[in-house]
Structures are given as structure tokens and as C-alpha cells.
Image (cartoon, rainbow, N blue to C red; front, side):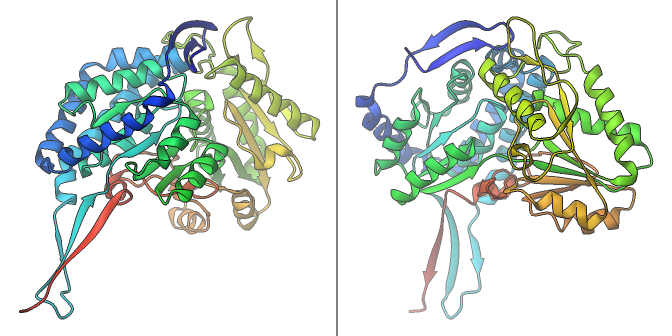
Length: 458
């Protein structure tokens, strides 16, 4: 049976299966990408930018079609799916607008020569291994800067995203990107490892779980290939004070329940100073109870299904185990209905450092709330995990909030907002949340040959 299967998580019905690539075609796949690279790298930055601009136009033109595909595949609420398509379009457009300038040669101090010049050149075919939770956005983060740079791409999407991955390839090809410049490949993890052994492949970018990142990172290192990894997160949302608790709770609940809680940089741990704690918990519980769970195509729905019934069951098991280990469950945590991957949004408190939930990522509609006795205590709890993707600090005192944000061990620190992602801002984490950066000029600084051309006097 194919490993690429579309099973609608709202109904539990398998709608389509897709054949995977036979092993004996992997070398030919790599060769196609390498042959295309020899031409693509010589395509002018202006021409590449024009293709990315047309890609953005097509994303906007085909937004409803693209959104419907991921609602069917992984259950994203339609409004959020359309928003993701628009975000992906903005990334392609940003690189179309700014990419050529980022590739201009840079003169540096000649240091005794007639000229020392820094050139930014592509390195060759890349493999992208992408997850299901943001099927378009996370691909755009990797694809747009690297196509702009002149690299070619073999894209292995998540096994539940076969239809949307085909649509992405169709859009890029319609925009003028060559069929072998961007290849959508239905391959498995073992085949990714074999591709990384091929001398044609020069790097790999993975967004996914810690286990997947460790496996791909090790394989890349073994074969001396560059890798970028964006892995899990257990982001802190630190509340120091507020002049509007209702608004703070509303922002917190929306951020946590967006995409049914299935985001690496979702605020998973709410760390609240003790004088605000009871009011915050009460408000969050009420918000989670009142959030409408249901059909992702229904405009009234706020929380759709998880990506699969197995994903739903994993989250439910994590909640049950947390309770067994002493946590207090205030609401939710129970699967809903006889079919589909629906789960009541849950709020947990009283989680001790000994509990599994304290240190692991819960990838679903679950909020964990911690009481902090002081700012120092809040910072300690925020940093007391092995993840370091992003975090936020909330306060009416901006200077105080900035000082606290500067103490968070994260790749992205926010004050009075959480998880903001824009095409020109760097995205990435530290510790077990991975390494490397995407988006902005930093996204064009990973898979690049920063080449020195030095000219001496005669």
C-alpha cells in the first residue's frame, strides 16, 4: 500500500492514495535535479524573481482551491487555510521583491589587494522534508529563498499532504519554474537517506519532530551535507501584568487554539505571576469551554479536528498521563464523536517537573498553566525545558517586558504578541528546537556559497 494517503480527519474517510517512487528511480531523480541546476543557476536573478512573483499571483488567484485541499488533508479550518495560502503568497512576493538586491556582490575591505569581493552563489540540488501542519507556509519558507538563490529542489512532503504538494508543484511550474528545478517527490524516510548519499545532493532542510530531525541531521552529517532543522517547541507565554485580563485571555486562547494547537511555535506553557494566576486560569478555562469544535468547513467553527485519529489519541494519552502524574485537568481532553479526530480543548495546571508533560511537547489544543512567584521564577520555568523556538512576555511596562524577553533562551522573543511570522523576519530556534534560520535575508544565508573573489595588484 502507498504511504501517501489522504484521509479526511473530519470524517475518518480515506479519499485517495498516491503511489510512492520506486527505489530504482532515486538516482535518476537526483540527476534530474542536478541537470536542471546547471541551467537554473545561470538564470538571471531578475528572471527568477519574476517567476516567484507569478507564483505569488497564482497562490492568490487559486486561494480557495489550495485552501480546500489542506482542509481535506489535515483538517485546517477554512478561514485559517485561506490565511495560510495568503501568507505563503506573501513570502514568494517578498523574495521576488527583495531577492535580487540580496544577491548583489559586496565589496569589502581589500586588505592589501586591488579588490576583495563577496559573491553569493547557489550550492546545488537540495532536499526539503516538510510537515503537514502548515503545508504551504513551511514549504514557502524553504522554497522561495532557495529558488531565488539558484538552488534546485526535491520536495518530500508529509505523507498526508500528497494533494496539496502536487498543487504547489503545479503552481510553480505554471509560474515558469522548470519541472526539474522543483520536483515534488512521493518518497519515504529511507529514500531521503539514500538521496543524501547521492553526490548530486548538496543539502537538506527539515521541519518536523525531534526524532525526524535527529535522523536527517545525522544522515546529512555523515555525508557532509549542510542541514537546517526546525523542530518542536514548547513556547512560554509569560504574563507579568495586564490592565485588561479579558483581552489577555482572549489573545492567549486564540493563539493556543489556532490550527487546533498544532504549531511548533504555539504558546504551550502559560507562566503567570501568582497575583494574576487564578483570574487567568478561570478566563482561559471559560474560553476553552466555549470554543466551537467541529466541521472545519463550517464558518462558525473555531477548532477543527487534529490531523488524524492517531494524533488525537496521542494528545489524549498525554493529557491522561499528566493527570495520573498529579496535574489538574480543568476542562476538556476527551475525544468527541464516533468518527473524525476531534478533541475537547483542555487546560492543565499543577504540572510538576517530574511529570512527562512538563518537558514534552503536546501538539494539540492543550494549555498548560504554571504559577510563578516572581519574575525570576517565571524566567526559570520558561527556560527549564530543552526547547527554544520562541516565547513571549506580556506587560504594560514595555521596558520591563523587554528585559525579561532578553532572558529567554529562544530564537524569537516577542513582547505583547506571540508567534508573529512575516516574510522579512528570521524564523528559527535554539536547543532542541533545531538550528539554522528561514525567511528574510537569513533564509538566503543557509544554502549559499559565500564566495570570495580577490584580485591582487599586478
